Image (cartoon, rainbow, N blue to C red; front, side, top):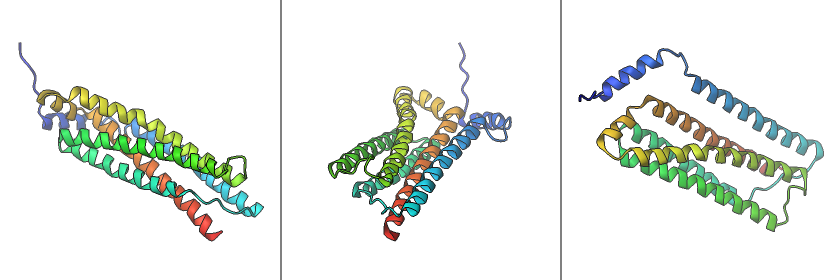
Length: 213
């Protein structure tokens, strides 16, 4: 019985030939359309918040301090997802799995911390029914929260697959040489950075509104 061994260089050549079939791979087009839709959604939310506040003369909402701390958690997860991709490209198996796990933990930490922040708001009797501005804050933060949750299964699947399949030099080579996994890791990076950038924008938006009054 003979075995066919494909070197990493040969795999890259095959991948390049596959890529020539598409000027832009359909996955990237779908991701772009998704992110444009999400962007339009949040532009609508923030625009409506600003319009209603200025028209009604309602005081802007002050975000809980925990929201600012959560920004640090998301920025940290953005850095670890970058390190995940770098570890993948440099064939560093253990670092790749480590950074995937840390990214997942940071994201779960963000979600838990957001729930605590919502609980603190309710303890202060700041409910969505209190005012239009409070309702917008809950809506905007809640929709972002939902999009973060939507990304967790993909991140968890990457980690599970890595733990399951990267157990021997051959399986590690096959994993790193798979162009489909690289493409999906690219998409995961794009999605994660988008969510992090969106959150920073939202925090800055609410903060500037509060400072300017």
